[in-house]
Amino acid sequence: MARKLDVEYFSIDLGRLEEELGDHAKEFFLLSSALDEALEHLERAKAAKEIAEDELKLAVAKIELDIRKDPEKYDLGKAPVISAVDKTVLLQSAYRAAKKKVYEAQERLIEAQARVHAGTTAVKTMDQRGKAIGKQVDLFISGYWAKPRTGGKGVNRDRLDESKLDQRRERIKNSQPKRGEDD
Image 1 (cartoon, rainbow, N blue to C red):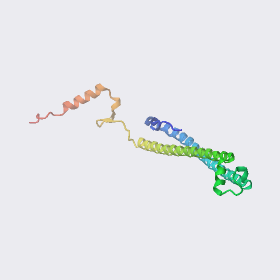
Image 2 (cartoon, rainbow, N blue to C red; image 1 turned 45 degrees about the horizontal axis):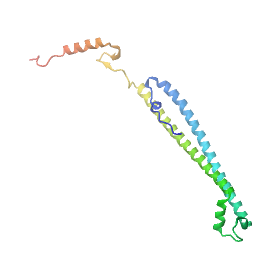
Image 3 (cartoon, helix red, strand yellow; image 1 turned 180 degrees about the vertical axis):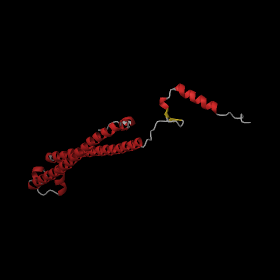
Image 4 (cartoon, one colour; image 1 turned 120 degrees about the horizontal axis):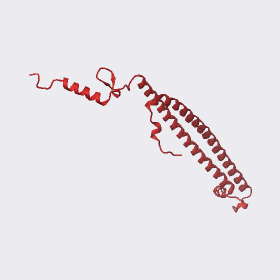
């Protein structure tokens, strides 16, 4: 059941925030549905374990009754002590079969609990991812990722080619007075 953590899955592509929101909603729904199924499975596993435990108690009661009715059939003598009856119960195949069912039910219950834990963790992670996408959208709307500007003229740096940048740098460098020329 354990999977390697895919960190890339949790990264948010800022260039496709709209798609990220839509994809997130679908994935959150699918994980929430899977968690609901895991919770239902857990309840069924709990009920199955209770039934197996009840069947074990019933098997013990039937065996004890049979031992008390005919102790000689089990080589215990006419009046067996309680500890001898208890130990004889453990040796009976009906008891062992019922006990095995309890162990199997317990195993299924543990698996169901692990599934619920994994589902809960996944839903919490997706909830956190949704909040992060929302914050990214807020930052985008507020202009947090505005393109860098050169000077005060509002020209985008990515629109200027290198030669124009070099020319601007040269003009700025030449227009500044050199130290010591003011004297």
